Structure formats: structure tokens, C-alpha cells
Length: 452
Ligand SMILES: [Zn+2]
Image (spheres, protein in one colour):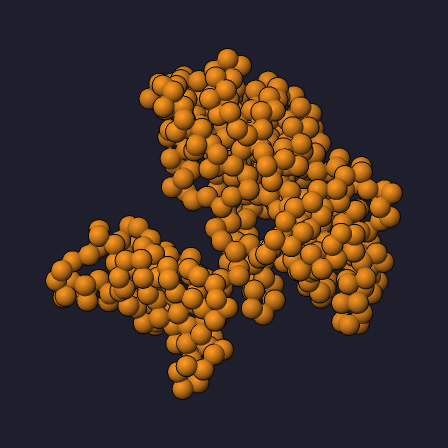
């Protein structure tokens, strides 16, 4: 490898923004979080009718919330609370105090609008500075900001944060990829901010143009807005000679800036002095201990215009209990691989499709197309995992196929702790299936509610 293009060649000491609370002692952080929580709950109780009602139903007032230990008593907010309240039903302050509105389309295309006061914007920029610092962006870096389309508003924040941090920013938005590649050469771009898929497009285009990105000063990619795999990360890092960092974006909460990977790339630090994370069992709503996988719930501890208390993100992750070798004291969550909507309960056990995928991967080294079909037989839940046979795993010997089927079944049973039926099916046969709501091509089809 050419040492000049080695992604790890940057030997400067880790950059720590002066304002950063990423490194404060846990005890001190907890005190700050509890104090901010009391204010946030009071703010939501007074200004959000939906939250006021939910707290009243539980017989709670803000006086019942003393510290973080009381958080689990509080009711949740969910995505539809935001879309139902569109446009201003979730405002925590009069519209006159709002300096920015960022509309976006939520689940099922229903509109949602995020509102910011001047202070909210300051906090957002502070978090994005910490985010960029986490991703190894230094003063002196040249950052090409290719956030575009739905990410236009995110791009505004990242732009301001990178400038405040002392980097040189080139706002290029999306499109005109050839021009972007030339710009990377001409301006000595050392970091790019975009979606991972746009960056892959850029890599592909650069190859066609005969530009070897590995020979450029490019060192880091700050990637937002998509769920991307470790395989994609390797592909990006190898093809461009960079380190690819995952940044957690949640438009309902704050856009990008909820959390980010540090140089260890082992989970995303959550900036929990402003956004407090919990992980819950998506079925029961109970808080899970650190290390256990479930649905991420976030509480905004300082948001003025749109405070959210215990907002269910639908993102599945786990809080990593071990401290990070980078020295940051704010906790990490595992990378978001999927949303909790797909979780299902079978024989009393919560099952995430990723557990099935891990089993399939262990057997064949790839995840073939698959679908889980849930049915009730004589009052008992039954699950069948249907797996499409690909040319790579196909054999014309029946015994080989039977052996493969039982290998899949054993691996799934090992991962889930319960046994499920496994059936190998023809290629492309899964695509045409429909569930009772008429939706196609789902990973989980639940037929338990409709008698056969
Ligand atoms: Zn770290």
C-alpha cells in the first residue's frame, strides 16, 4: 500500500473541540442529565397537550421526576404523534420564537416538520462539531459537502459545523459528479460528507474517469442517512483509501448529530448530555439493560421548539456497556442495522430478522432472499422461514438440498433458542407474496390474525 494514501496515515493528535462534553466524568454527566431531564419533562408537560394527557393518565406530574431513575415511569411518544400534530401541534413555544422549520416526509409519506429556536440551532451545530471531531475531522481539513435532496437541511448544519470547527468547506450538493471529482483533485479535498450510496457512485464514476481516489489527499468519509453494512464500509474504504464513518441521523429528533463513530469504528457515541438514550423491549416497553438489543428511545434534554420525551425511534440497537478506548465518556450504541417494525414474537420469544440473517450468513457466507411466515395452527404460533435457493447453493441432489435445509434450521434454532420450520423455495418466488395488508416482499408475513 502506498503510505501516502493509507487511511491511517493521519498522525495528528485527536482533535477535541473546547466545548466538548464528550469526555466529562460519568457522575458529573449524570447530574447534568438529571437536571436537564427535569426541565425537559416540565417543558413537555406544559406545552405539549398529547404529553400532558399521557402523563395525567399515569397520575404523573413533573414533580414526580427527580432524576434519570424516574425516566422509565414516563409515557412514550411515537412517530404518529408528530405526523398527527402536523404542522405546529408539537411546538413547545410560540411560532414567533422559531427561527427555522425543516419539513420532511415521515412514515407512509405523511409530512412532519422539525422546528428550531435560535438556541436549538446552536446546540445542533455544537453536536455536529462533536460529530465531525469524532469522525476525525480537524481544523485544516477540506470538507466536500455533498448532502443534497432530502439532506439539504442536514447539509446546512454540517456546513456551519465544519466551518466553526475550522475546516474549509466546499458546498457542492449533489449532481455533476464529474465536476465533484475534479474538485477533489484541484482543492485537495480530505473529507467528503454524503450518503454512502452517493459516495459509491462517486467511486464508480472516478474509476471510469481514470481518477484513482487512493492517490488523492482524501482521508475520511462522513456518511449519513442510510443503513449500510460492514461490507459496504470495506468496499468504500478499500476503493477510496479512506476511513468511512457512520453518523446517526434522525430527522424527528435533530437530523444528523445524534451520534457518530470515533476512530475505533466500534459503535456510535451518543451525545447524551443533550439526547438521552434508552433501549427498550419493543413488545413490552420495558427498559433493557445495557448490552441487550432492543428499540432505541431518545429524550431530548435541551430542545426548546420541539421537545421529545421518550421518543420511540423504531431503530434497533444496543447500548455498549464497555468504555470506548478513545476516552470519550458518552456511551456508544451499536450501528443501526434495521428498524424494530419487523420484530415479532413467536413462542413467547422476541425475534429480530437480523438473528435469522446471522444464521443464514453463518451457513452460506451470504444472506439469500428469505421470508418468515407466521401462522397459528390449533392456537399455537408457528414460524416458517422460506429461503430462496440461489444458483450458488443449488444442487440437483435431493439429499444435498435436504442437508442444507437442516443446516439452516439448526443454525436458526441455535441463534433464536426456539425451533422453526425451514423450507427452501424457488428463486424469485418470495417477491410475489402478499400479506393480509397487501404489502409485498416483506421479511415477515404475519398470517396469525386471519383464519386460513
Ligand atoms: Zn470512541
